Image (cartoon, rainbow over all chains, first blue to last red; front, side, top):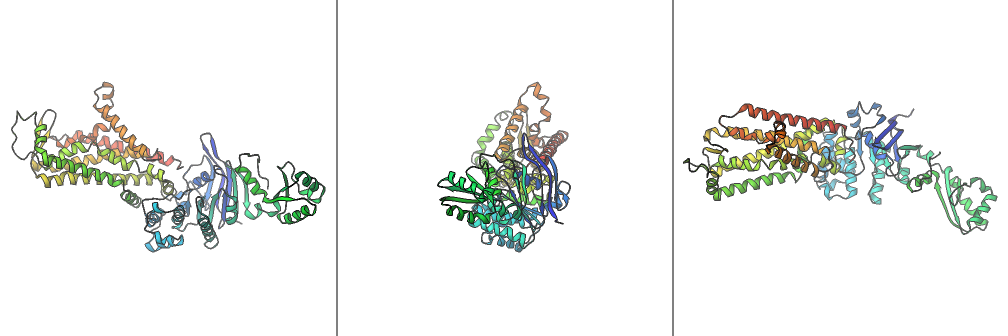
Length: 311
Length: 279
């Protein structure tokens, strides 16, 4: 039976008339990277803040490490390291001083060697004695992660950890998350508004929209290639549609779609292309996209016509 | 608890703005000392003009004790701003920087967090007043020497023998610590509601100015309130320069200030424990 590090049941947070989190339930398996996905304002940060006791839930239950978060706050937070949204630190202090303070606040009396080792892990040894106000966004993010890891937590919560980073910085954070999970056995909850980012690192994921759960499951099952949406654009869409309706591809056609769309296994896309060309249809574009990705993109557009994702 | 307080102290004394207060106090005291050193006799003639025709006072009137008393009279009115500068920043400054969420997500109770921040603000207040005491009293004694202290009251002139003065200053500075800690507690309370430190600093000064106006206005409606306004008790350090000292009055004022400190800090803890940290 899977052991869960986080169990959330019917979590609700109401800010005045706004229901930021609306009856959210999910469970994070031990040792996994768990992606927490949703567009900006979907309720990810509020949920994370409730898990870190920064925000009090209106109702619901949160259990971490098998203990109730309200009654065992201290014991739980000793095992949790977090970077919440921006990696804000004391800019007038050095990287070393920031790390030392965070270690002591986490109940760890780390010596110079341990602190320097932690800075080395995030590549900041050379800048240990530099004030944080001189750091780039990427360096601040790395220091934030060092501060989150200094007390060797079992659960690491990273809220939008790649925000504002350059491609190299994003790759570094991604590798670090994978290293923590695969090599050190840590459980990592990582939030993002980018499916492509979560897809690369997460074992399981949860998608929320307007505070509600939309989908939850393993990444492999949620992003099953059998569930691919293919958007077709040709020089003559009417003729192409007519041909498709008379061929065996007709079974994959999506009705009521904008333009020509087919739902099928991703591996069949080259065969579709070959059949179209053989039928004399000039293909301008053949775009394969997973239906979940398609759904997720629809959430980020103004036209929020998709009510619920059906997996 | 001490560990948390030491972290807060470390942060306070690493922040450049902390030293603005020390620099301001040093500058003001040095200016007053310089002015009195250069033209102290003229100042003495001015303050003694009402009694000059009645009394002939012999001896070293312009001495270290007198200079210190003059400095305290002028400076202690302005110190609340310097106290609010740090205490008002204690929680709001962290919220503004985004570090409050780091602190509150650590395995430390919010009550401990508030108490350690307040303890650090109090230690800063004591340090500032100690610094002020060293400069205004001991440096003045070195420059101007020792003699009896003349204290001018509205209806009398009091001369305190020099051997009877030092303990009064100790009492006065101790009382000033209590008064300024009350200011720190108020700024601290206002800090919990704000997302940047400017608001609490300005609000603290506004409340002090408003209460001081209420204290000085002789309107029967406000007279009922006066005994309960902390500003009415803040300048009672002067009570140590009465002869005899009215200890019951001083104790009453001290308890009133202490009551305010306890109330302000308790409300801060109550609010902070319930607060959603969204910054």
